[in-house]
Length: 292
Length: 123
Image (cartoon, rainbow over the protein chains, first blue to last red):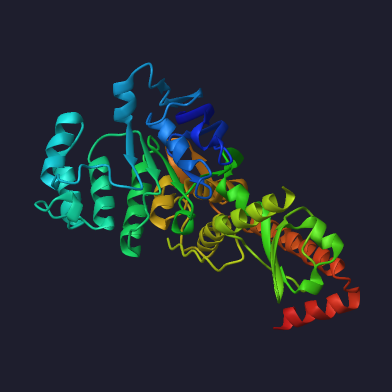
C-alpha cells in the first residue's frame, strides 16, 4: 500500500521561463507504507516545487497526488492532517512564543498531544517564553519537528529539514525518523541536496535534475550498480573511458563510476571502492553536463 | 546477538549483517530455535534501511539458516553438519570462481595463481 503516490506531476513557471525556464516535468513516484524515500537533487532542480505541490502550496498544471489513497480535492482536511511537514525555513509567526504555538496547534489538530509536545520541547531544551524570532536556526527546526511529531500523521514531508542541526541532534532525529516508520504504517519523504547521514536510513532514492526524473530506485540496488574507481590519467585508455560514467579529472588523476557487470572487473591498478549516494550523483551530474 | 556494521567494509551493509548473523549461528552464539528480532526493529536499532535488513534476512532464509513466517518472525534453523559442509563447499567454489576470473582478467598464469594460493593457504 502506497502512503504517497505522485502521478504525472507537471508545473511550468512562466516568470522564470525567460531566464532559462524552470519546469517540473511529468514526475511520478510512490512511497509504500513503512519506508523512507530521499528526494535528491541540486539546488533549483525542482525538489521544493515537488514538495510544495504535495503540500498544496503550489498548484500543479497537471498530475495528481494521493496521500493514503486520498486526493486533496476529495478531502482537504484529512489530506492535511495526514501530513507532517517540516520545511527549510520556520513557518511559525516570528512574534509568537512556543506557548502560543502549542495552543494554536491544539486547536487546529484534533490529534495534537500536548504532553508529547511538552516532552519533546523539554528534551530539546526549547524555551517557552521567548519569541520565536530569538530562536536559533537549530531551535526553530526542533520546534517544527516537535509540533509535527506530537500529532498523528501518516507521512512526514521534510524539505531540507536537517539543515542547520548539530551532529548530535541529527543523530537523534535519524533515530526518531526510524522509530516513526518502524510499525510499517508510516512513511517519510525527505528532500536534500546532501545525503550524508541520511544515506543509511533511506530505502528509496529519487534523483531529480532540471525538473525531470533521473532515476527512482531502491538505494541498495543503486549502490550495487557502480564502483567508484580512481587512477592516474595514464590509466584512461579509450576502452576504459568508454565504460566509465562522469569522469572527473585533476592534474594527478581521475575518479569515475564503473558500472558493475557480471565478469567485468575494473582493470588492475585502479583503486576501486563502494561509492556513496552523493558520489554517484556527483558523477552522474558531471556525465550529464558533458553529454549536453 | 551482536551486529557491528562498518562503513569502511568492502561488503555492502546487507551482506555484513548476513555474515554477522550467519557466523553467530554457526558458532552457536545464536542457538537453533532462537527468534530473531523483527526486520523493522533490526533496521531501527542498527540505523540502516528496512530494505537492507529485509535483504539480509531473505538471503539467510534462502541459504537455510533461518525460516521466516509471516506474523511470527524469523527463527534460527538447526544446522546439519553435512548440509553445512556442502554449503561451505558451494561458497568456497563461488569465491574461487571470482578469484580465478580476476586472475584471468589480469593475465595471471596458472603457476602464479597456484603460488598465490599456496601463500594464502600457509599464512
